[in-house]
Length: 331
Image (cartoon, rainbow, N blue to C red; front, side):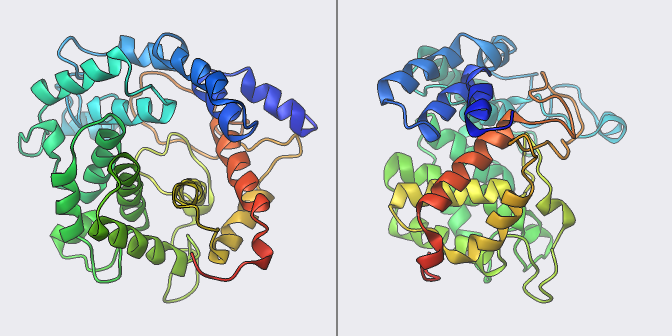
Protein backbone atom coordinates (compact mmCIF):
# COMPACT_ATOMS: atom_id res chain seq x y z
CA UNK A 1 0.00 0.00 0.00
CA UNK A 2 1.80 3.06 -1.22
CA UNK A 3 -1.09 5.33 -2.19
CA UNK A 4 -4.44 6.39 -0.80
CA UNK A 5 -6.40 4.29 -3.28
CA UNK A 6 -4.61 1.15 -2.13
CA UNK A 7 -5.42 1.95 1.50
CA UNK A 8 -9.08 2.55 0.67
CA UNK A 9 -9.19 -0.74 -1.23
CA UNK A 10 -7.68 -2.45 1.82
CA UNK A 11 -10.46 -1.02 4.00
CA UNK A 12 -13.15 -1.97 1.50
CA UNK A 13 -11.84 -5.53 1.56
CA UNK A 14 -12.47 -5.76 5.30
CA UNK A 15 -15.44 -6.76 7.42
CA UNK A 16 -18.80 -5.08 6.64
CA UNK A 17 -18.44 -3.10 9.90
CA UNK A 18 -15.37 -1.38 8.44
CA UNK A 19 -16.55 -1.34 4.85
CA UNK A 20 -19.79 0.60 5.28
CA UNK A 21 -18.09 3.30 7.35
CA UNK A 22 -15.31 3.69 4.79
CA UNK A 23 -17.97 4.08 2.09
CA UNK A 24 -19.83 6.73 4.07
CA UNK A 25 -16.99 8.65 5.71
CA UNK A 26 -14.16 8.41 3.19
CA UNK A 27 -15.84 7.94 -0.19
CA UNK A 28 -19.05 9.94 0.39
CA UNK A 29 -20.97 7.06 -1.19
CA UNK A 30 -24.74 7.44 -1.65
CA UNK A 31 -26.68 6.58 1.48
CA UNK A 32 -28.46 3.72 -0.28
CA UNK A 33 -25.08 2.10 -1.01
CA UNK A 34 -23.56 2.34 2.46
CA UNK A 35 -26.85 1.44 4.16
CA UNK A 36 -27.01 -1.74 2.09
CA UNK A 37 -23.50 -2.59 3.26
CA UNK A 38 -24.36 -1.69 6.84
CA UNK A 39 -27.30 -4.10 6.80
CA UNK A 40 -24.80 -6.94 6.39
CA UNK A 41 -23.46 -6.36 9.92
CA UNK A 42 -26.42 -8.28 11.35
CA UNK A 43 -25.79 -11.38 9.24
CA UNK A 44 -22.11 -11.42 8.27
CA UNK A 45 -18.65 -11.05 9.77
CA UNK A 46 -17.91 -9.70 13.20
CA UNK A 47 -21.45 -8.51 13.89
CA UNK A 48 -22.99 -11.89 13.16
CA UNK A 49 -20.22 -13.60 15.10
CA UNK A 50 -20.82 -11.48 18.20
CA UNK A 51 -24.59 -11.90 17.95
CA UNK A 52 -24.13 -15.67 17.74
CA UNK A 53 -22.46 -15.56 21.16
CA UNK A 54 -25.52 -14.01 22.80
CA UNK A 55 -27.22 -15.95 25.60
CA UNK A 56 -30.90 -16.93 25.23
CA UNK A 57 -31.84 -14.30 27.84
CA UNK A 58 -30.25 -11.53 25.76
CA UNK A 59 -27.06 -11.15 27.76
CA UNK A 60 -23.51 -12.07 26.82
CA UNK A 61 -21.50 -14.43 29.00
CA UNK A 62 -24.15 -14.37 31.70
CA UNK A 63 -23.48 -10.91 33.12
CA UNK A 64 -23.88 -7.17 32.70
CA UNK A 65 -20.30 -6.02 33.42
CA UNK A 66 -18.53 -9.21 34.50
CA UNK A 67 -19.16 -12.69 33.07
CA UNK A 68 -21.07 -15.11 35.28
CA UNK A 69 -18.75 -16.96 37.62
CA UNK A 70 -15.78 -14.72 36.93
CA UNK A 71 -14.14 -13.97 40.27
CA UNK A 72 -11.47 -11.60 41.56
CA UNK A 73 -8.79 -14.28 41.36
CA UNK A 74 -9.47 -14.77 37.65
CA UNK A 75 -9.39 -11.00 37.17
CA UNK A 76 -6.01 -10.87 38.89
CA UNK A 77 -4.60 -13.72 36.80
CA UNK A 78 -6.07 -12.94 33.39
CA UNK A 79 -7.06 -9.28 33.49
CA UNK A 80 -10.40 -7.60 33.05
CA UNK A 81 -12.74 -9.65 30.82
CA UNK A 82 -14.49 -7.99 27.87
CA UNK A 83 -17.13 -10.60 27.04
CA UNK A 84 -20.08 -9.46 29.16
CA UNK A 85 -23.16 -7.58 27.98
CA UNK A 86 -22.05 -3.96 28.30
CA UNK A 87 -18.94 -4.45 26.16
CA UNK A 88 -20.83 -6.49 23.55
CA UNK A 89 -23.44 -3.74 23.16
CA UNK A 90 -20.77 -1.08 22.76
CA UNK A 91 -19.04 -3.23 20.17
CA UNK A 92 -22.27 -3.68 18.20
CA UNK A 93 -22.77 0.09 18.26
CA UNK A 94 -19.25 0.56 16.92
CA UNK A 95 -19.95 -2.01 14.21
CA UNK A 96 -23.02 0.01 13.26
CA UNK A 97 -25.67 -2.67 13.81
CA UNK A 98 -28.90 -1.09 12.57
CA UNK A 99 -30.95 -0.18 15.69
CA UNK A 100 -34.12 -0.78 13.70
CA UNK A 101 -33.30 -4.37 12.76
CA UNK A 102 -35.21 -7.17 14.46
CA UNK A 103 -32.17 -8.55 16.25
CA UNK A 104 -31.29 -5.17 17.77
CA UNK A 105 -34.85 -4.51 18.96
CA UNK A 106 -35.09 -7.95 20.52
CA UNK A 107 -31.74 -7.54 22.23
CA UNK A 108 -32.80 -4.24 23.82
CA UNK A 109 -35.97 -5.87 25.12
CA UNK A 110 -34.24 -8.95 26.51
CA UNK A 111 -31.40 -7.03 28.14
CA UNK A 112 -33.91 -4.72 29.79
CA UNK A 113 -35.88 -7.68 31.10
CA UNK A 114 -33.08 -9.94 32.30
CA UNK A 115 -29.78 -8.11 32.81
CA UNK A 116 -28.89 -6.61 36.19
CA UNK A 117 -25.76 -4.68 37.09
CA UNK A 118 -23.24 -6.54 39.20
CA UNK A 119 -22.75 -3.63 41.60
CA UNK A 120 -26.27 -3.33 42.97
CA UNK A 121 -28.67 -5.38 40.91
CA UNK A 122 -30.14 -2.40 39.10
CA UNK A 123 -32.01 -3.06 35.84
CA UNK A 124 -29.57 -2.66 32.97
CA UNK A 125 -31.18 0.36 31.31
CA UNK A 126 -31.47 2.14 34.67
CA UNK A 127 -27.69 2.46 34.70
CA UNK A 128 -24.93 1.60 37.13
CA UNK A 129 -23.14 3.92 39.59
CA UNK A 130 -19.82 4.70 37.87
CA UNK A 131 -19.79 7.63 35.50
CA UNK A 132 -17.54 5.81 33.04
CA UNK A 133 -19.94 2.86 32.77
CA UNK A 134 -22.99 5.10 32.69
CA UNK A 135 -21.52 7.21 29.89
CA UNK A 136 -21.22 4.14 27.70
CA UNK A 137 -24.65 2.89 28.78
CA UNK A 138 -26.15 6.20 27.70
CA UNK A 139 -24.37 5.96 24.34
CA UNK A 140 -25.53 2.38 23.77
CA UNK A 141 -29.05 2.98 25.01
CA UNK A 142 -29.57 6.15 23.00
CA UNK A 143 -28.17 4.50 19.89
CA UNK A 144 -30.48 1.50 20.25
CA UNK A 145 -33.56 3.60 21.00
CA UNK A 146 -33.80 3.30 24.79
CA UNK A 147 -34.98 6.18 26.98
CA UNK A 148 -31.83 6.89 29.00
CA UNK A 149 -32.85 10.35 30.22
CA UNK A 150 -32.72 9.26 33.87
CA UNK A 151 -29.08 8.19 33.53
CA UNK A 152 -28.30 11.47 31.75
CA UNK A 153 -29.84 13.42 34.62
CA UNK A 154 -27.64 11.53 37.06
CA UNK A 155 -24.52 12.26 35.02
CA UNK A 156 -25.35 15.95 34.83
CA UNK A 157 -25.46 16.06 38.62
CA UNK A 158 -22.07 14.34 38.88
CA UNK A 159 -20.05 16.76 36.78
CA UNK A 160 -17.06 18.21 38.65
CA UNK A 161 -16.16 21.87 38.99
CA UNK A 162 -13.47 21.67 36.29
CA UNK A 163 -16.09 20.66 33.73
CA UNK A 164 -15.54 16.93 33.36
CA UNK A 165 -16.23 13.67 35.15
CA UNK A 166 -14.28 11.09 37.14
CA UNK A 167 -15.27 7.59 38.26
CA UNK A 168 -13.26 8.23 41.42
CA UNK A 169 -15.53 11.11 42.45
CA UNK A 170 -17.27 8.81 44.93
CA UNK A 171 -13.85 8.18 46.52
CA UNK A 172 -13.15 11.88 46.93
CA UNK A 173 -11.59 12.90 43.62
CA UNK A 174 -12.29 16.50 42.63
CA UNK A 175 -10.27 16.48 39.41
CA UNK A 176 -11.77 15.10 36.24
CA UNK A 177 -10.39 12.16 34.29
CA UNK A 178 -9.64 12.23 30.56
CA UNK A 179 -11.08 8.74 30.12
CA UNK A 180 -14.24 9.18 32.17
CA UNK A 181 -14.93 12.55 30.59
CA UNK A 182 -14.69 11.16 27.07
CA UNK A 183 -16.90 8.19 27.94
CA UNK A 184 -19.57 10.58 29.20
CA UNK A 185 -19.16 12.97 26.27
CA UNK A 186 -19.72 10.15 23.79
CA UNK A 187 -22.87 9.21 25.68
CA UNK A 188 -24.20 12.76 25.77
CA UNK A 189 -23.49 13.18 22.06
CA UNK A 190 -25.40 10.00 21.17
CA UNK A 191 -28.24 11.12 23.46
CA UNK A 192 -28.32 14.48 21.69
CA UNK A 193 -28.32 12.81 18.28
CA UNK A 194 -31.23 10.57 19.28
CA UNK A 195 -33.40 13.02 21.21
CA UNK A 196 -32.05 16.52 20.64
CA UNK A 197 -30.86 16.56 24.25
CA UNK A 198 -31.72 19.35 26.65
CA UNK A 199 -30.22 22.76 27.32
CA UNK A 200 -28.59 21.25 30.40
CA UNK A 201 -27.11 18.24 28.61
CA UNK A 202 -25.79 20.38 25.76
CA UNK A 203 -24.20 22.81 28.22
CA UNK A 204 -22.60 19.94 30.15
CA UNK A 205 -21.24 18.46 26.95
CA UNK A 206 -19.67 21.78 25.96
CA UNK A 207 -18.08 22.07 29.42
CA UNK A 208 -16.67 18.56 29.15
CA UNK A 209 -15.27 19.35 25.71
CA UNK A 210 -13.64 22.46 27.12
CA UNK A 211 -11.97 20.35 29.81
CA UNK A 212 -10.24 18.31 27.09
CA UNK A 213 -9.57 21.23 24.75
CA UNK A 214 -7.84 23.31 27.41
CA UNK A 215 -5.45 20.40 27.79
CA UNK A 216 -5.00 19.95 24.02
CA UNK A 217 -6.45 16.44 24.50
CA UNK A 218 -3.43 15.02 26.33
CA UNK A 219 -1.52 17.56 28.44
CA UNK A 220 -1.69 18.33 32.13
CA UNK A 221 -3.03 21.81 32.72
CA UNK A 222 -0.62 22.29 35.62
CA UNK A 223 2.67 21.41 33.87
CA UNK A 224 1.93 21.11 30.17
CA UNK A 225 3.43 17.62 30.18
CA UNK A 226 1.55 14.63 28.76
CA UNK A 227 -0.83 13.39 31.43
CA UNK A 228 -0.18 9.78 30.37
CA UNK A 229 2.22 8.56 27.65
CA UNK A 230 -0.39 6.05 26.54
CA UNK A 231 -2.75 8.85 25.54
CA UNK A 232 -0.45 9.26 22.52
CA UNK A 233 -0.49 5.55 21.67
CA UNK A 234 -3.38 4.06 19.74
CA UNK A 235 -5.37 1.03 20.77
CA UNK A 236 -8.45 -0.85 19.71
CA UNK A 237 -10.94 -1.67 21.00
CA UNK A 238 -10.64 1.21 23.45
CA UNK A 239 -13.19 -0.27 25.87
CA UNK A 240 -13.11 2.48 28.53
CA UNK A 241 -9.58 3.70 27.78
CA UNK A 242 -8.57 7.04 26.35
CA UNK A 243 -6.27 8.00 23.52
CA UNK A 244 -6.11 11.11 21.36
CA UNK A 245 -7.43 9.32 18.26
CA UNK A 246 -10.59 8.33 20.10
CA UNK A 247 -10.92 11.93 21.31
CA UNK A 248 -10.37 13.37 17.83
CA UNK A 249 -12.95 11.01 16.38
CA UNK A 250 -15.40 12.25 19.02
CA UNK A 251 -14.74 15.91 18.18
CA UNK A 252 -15.21 15.17 14.50
CA UNK A 253 -18.52 13.47 15.22
CA UNK A 254 -19.66 16.33 17.44
CA UNK A 255 -18.74 18.97 14.87
CA UNK A 256 -20.58 17.13 12.10
CA UNK A 257 -23.70 16.90 14.26
CA UNK A 258 -23.70 20.58 15.18
CA UNK A 259 -22.29 21.97 11.94
CA UNK A 260 -19.50 23.71 13.85
CA UNK A 261 -15.90 24.23 12.75
CA UNK A 262 -12.96 22.37 14.33
CA UNK A 263 -11.30 24.00 17.32
CA UNK A 264 -7.66 24.97 16.69
CA UNK A 265 -6.67 23.54 20.05
CA UNK A 266 -6.98 20.12 18.41
CA UNK A 267 -4.07 20.98 16.11
CA UNK A 268 -1.31 19.40 18.19
CA UNK A 269 -3.20 16.12 18.54
CA UNK A 270 -4.01 16.10 14.82
CA UNK A 271 -0.36 16.59 13.89
CA UNK A 272 0.65 13.81 16.25
CA UNK A 273 -1.89 11.58 14.52
CA UNK A 274 -0.54 12.59 11.12
CA UNK A 275 3.01 11.86 12.21
CA UNK A 276 2.12 8.34 13.35
CA UNK A 277 1.13 7.25 9.84
CA UNK A 278 3.26 4.43 8.45
CA UNK A 279 5.00 4.77 5.07
CA UNK A 280 2.40 2.43 3.57
CA UNK A 281 -0.38 4.86 4.50
CA UNK A 282 -1.84 2.88 7.40
CA UNK A 283 -1.77 3.29 11.17
CA UNK A 284 -0.41 0.45 13.32
CA UNK A 285 -1.98 -0.86 16.49
CA UNK A 286 0.23 0.17 19.41
CA UNK A 287 -1.40 -2.02 22.01
CA UNK A 288 -4.63 -3.64 23.06
CA UNK A 289 -5.91 -4.33 26.57
CA UNK A 290 -5.44 -7.88 27.74
CA UNK A 291 -8.29 -10.01 29.01
CA UNK A 292 -10.90 -12.38 27.68
CA UNK A 293 -12.50 -11.45 24.34
CA UNK A 294 -14.88 -13.17 21.92
CA UNK A 295 -12.46 -12.71 19.02
CA UNK A 296 -9.70 -10.39 17.81
CA UNK A 297 -10.30 -7.80 15.09
CA UNK A 298 -6.70 -6.78 14.40
CA UNK A 299 -3.48 -8.66 13.69
CA UNK A 300 -1.78 -7.51 16.88
CA UNK A 301 0.45 -4.66 18.09
CA UNK A 302 2.85 -3.31 15.49
CA UNK A 303 0.67 -4.46 12.60
CA UNK A 304 -1.54 -2.21 10.44
CA UNK A 305 -4.98 -1.76 11.96
CA UNK A 306 -8.02 -1.25 9.77
CA UNK A 307 -9.99 0.24 12.66
CA UNK A 308 -7.31 2.80 13.50
CA UNK A 309 -6.74 3.61 9.83
CA UNK A 310 -10.45 4.17 9.22
CA UNK A 311 -10.74 6.49 12.20
CA UNK A 312 -7.52 8.35 11.42
CA UNK A 313 -8.41 8.92 7.77
CA UNK A 314 -11.85 10.29 8.54
CA UNK A 315 -10.44 12.63 11.21
CA UNK A 316 -7.86 13.98 8.75
CA UNK A 317 -10.44 14.29 5.95
CA UNK A 318 -12.62 16.37 8.26
CA UNK A 319 -9.76 18.47 9.63
CA UNK A 320 -8.01 19.14 6.34
CA UNK A 321 -11.30 19.82 4.58
CA UNK A 322 -12.13 22.56 7.07
CA UNK A 323 -9.02 24.63 6.36
CA UNK A 324 -8.29 24.86 10.06
CA UNK A 325 -5.26 27.11 9.73
CA UNK A 326 -7.57 30.01 9.01
CA UNK A 327 -9.93 29.36 11.90
CA UNK A 328 -10.05 31.01 15.30
CA UNK A 329 -9.90 29.19 18.61
CA UNK A 330 -13.61 28.83 19.23
CA UNK A 331 -15.15 25.36 19.22
